[in-house]
Structure formats: structure tokens, C-alpha cells
Length: 121
Image (tube, rainbow, N blue to C red; front, side):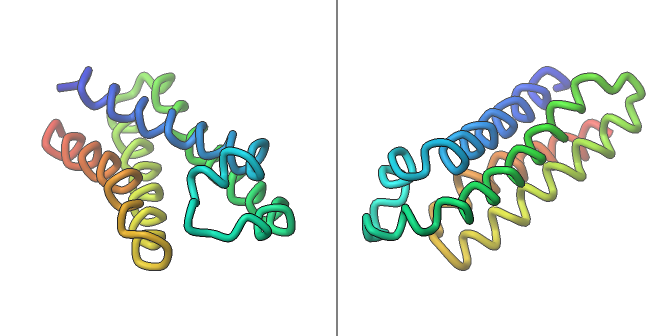
């Protein structure tokens, strides 16, 4: 079960590194492909705002990556649940305010990770 939990944490961290990349560095190219429903002219004026969001996604990824270096099982579980919880809450909010699809992409894996961590402990 521990390997499965680590795989899920790695997937969630990788997703957030991808979010960091396209929001901070490829907002006007990849961002347009991801958010097809937004008008093309909105991407240039919102570039700095998207970069700020990307930075937050980077912090979430960093917290999840940090868990791979924690040797104390209790601390590992607590930190992993905290950061997965942050991801889940952000995804739920985005699903309510932007697109329901975000719940399945962002919150779903995080919630699965939390459930597995709680079962394992």
C-alpha cells in the first residue's frame, strides 16, 4: 500500500509541476489549449495573474515532493495528508467556480491519496 500511496503522491506532485509550468511559463500557448473556452485575447493581460497561480501550484508540488524525504512515518503521513488536503480543497473550489472537470483531475487523485493514507494508518 505504501508504494501505491507514493505513486499517487508523485502523480499529484507531477500534475502541479505541470500546472506551474504552463501557468508561469506557457500561459499564452499551453494555457490557451487547456482553457479553450476562454477568449484568446484574455491570456496576455492575465499572464502575471496566472504566473502567481503557478507559483502556488509549485508550493503544493514542493510540499508533496518533501514527503519523499521524511523518514518518520507519523510526520510523513501528516505532511502528506496536509498537502493532499490543500490540493483537494483547491480542486473542489475550482470545480465549483471554473469547471467540474477540475474535480476529477485535481481533487480526485488527492482524495484517493488521503483515503489510502488514512486506511494505512
